[in-house]
Length: 380
Ligand code: SF4
Image 1: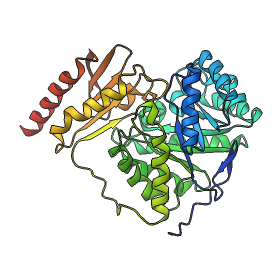
Image 2 (image 1 turned 30 degrees about the vertical axis):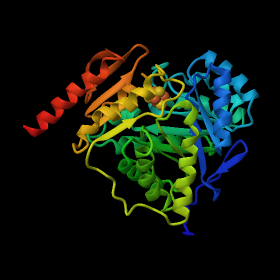
Image 3 (image 1 turned 90 degrees about the vertical axis):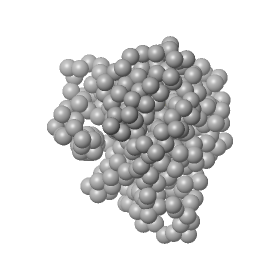
Image 4 (image 1 turned 45 degrees about the horizontal axis):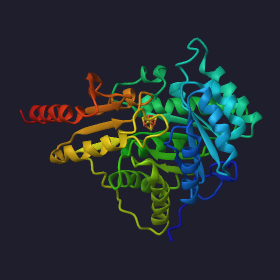
């Protein structure tokens, strides 16, 4: 066994488990069923629980989702985390039924724009306190607080994420609320390593939730995540983690299995890095899907993209495939080509530029056309 000196993070209790403070690294996942489909969501939670999930996140975007969550919580003993995106005020409707509330600083702007974020966070903290919940400040590369991104160079995505995380930590500390952890996620494992290292150097006390977003399908998605986790966990950084994989609903347990396997391998010294982050060649990123996915055809679409683009494997091109409008438009900006799903069509982008919306059965040939063009431009 490898002796790893873990960072001295403080302990944060999430229902029946605790993270930080020397506790074992907890493994999480998220449901991808429609939250309002109570039976399917409970089934998926039970499936994740039997795969060994310590905490399971559920997305809630509406009052109806919140009502469904109440029913769901009554039918499981899992530690539940609720994922709040734009509509932060749903916190009070769901907090009584969950053990953790996740908010994204970059999404606190969409509702009640005139209200300062501090007021919104103070409200979330009040709700968390009243309901015995932990909080995660979930900073995501594709949706960083716009006031922060404007301050830094266009190609510096790490500084705005860090500044946002530090500001939120300081604010939570100023409220005397310490039952929180932070996540800093990106789809590029190198950036995940850098941003988490820099965060941990300044705030070694704050527990970190590790993850590589849109890692894609196994086995590539697991490999991308593994290289980042080896670098971080191997140096004592990280208290809980999620391996985000694009897999059909009945295979979601693979996220937990992959997480546990990576942890076991690191502990046994079975690591594949001094890290060679495969920085060359075609890079397909796809979101793990969640209840927000706009069309069930998404997972299949991600697989078709992978298959169709195999011929371009030697080109340094990134293609992003995202399941919905919540994160799709932002997270595809940095890809060479991006697709994000709407209910009946798929939006196609070249970098940040929209190229149009295409039906599901027309998008693959259209994508190929763009890919061929991109390759031709690079060769000329
Ligand atoms: S892009 Fe949308 S569907 Fe995919 S995981 Fe993110 S929120 Fe869920």
